[in-house]
Length: 430
Image (cartoon, rainbow, N blue to C red; front, side):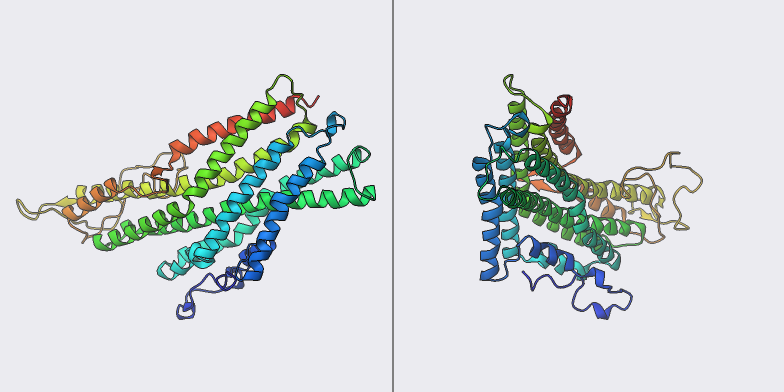
């Protein structure tokens, strides 16, 4: 894998003098992130190290922590009745994410997996946008993980500082507590970061296709052959099918595990014999926030790219309508050919825009398309629109399209479960 993480730009980038190659476009952040989480499996030694870290931090430490530090004889503030749910949820997601990342890295490599090997076929605008997204990826990981890590660290430090006399220890009490606390925080950071990192990988692959779709939409703003439009759309559809195939199991397992974890936590906290307070449920709520956040990253990326891909159909239909309205018959019975006196919006004297700003994406808007003097025939335009209508592109999970209706339903369920848990936690603060 290490040899794969070299550069964002193609090797022949020097042949393009108009494109600058600053150092920030390198994949150094990804290589550093993979090394920090021991996901570099480029040789046998690194494979052994990677799996060793996984078994120690994702399985060994949680098991020992749960059975040794359950503290059933402690006072109410230091008991951990929901620790099993927290540890099982985090370890399950870490296992799914680690196995997925290892499989992707071993089978494809970073460049092929993130479609970096295809950047030589796209425009400079797409390459620059993808480079900016790569630079922000590790920052995004820190934005999601560090606040939760700070809350978890505060809870752990408080738990050991106020309950040192009740918590089991080996040898020196203070040294034992410091070592165990550090191992627990390292385990929590490793498991949470692995899951969020897998979600960010998915977001990156989707973002490249979004950039390509936005660049592809520009073909309707200029004189273009239908053959070239169709060829580019087929390439994008193929990439979307590849992304759907690679991530379908990860997305399905994430959705099922998050929902199951939320329901199980809800059932445990609603029992009449259970005392719910911030000291006992706080860690469970923090775990739920982390898992729902990762799932939302994936679902939002999938829905966004599906919406953009399907907006192409509306854009093509609008292009066809504008050209047809402005067409004329050269002779009776002959095919109408589009012709216009200027490449201005038609009609120029009508205000088709609303007073409010357009809050949607750039593809799905109400702007008319410029019509050029020599555009394609009516039959070709109609055939292209018909093809796009019957071949909707987007992200699928085992054949089911991930669209806005689906994400609204899923997010509503997950958010309702999370807010119920947070409400139980906050209400019982007193």
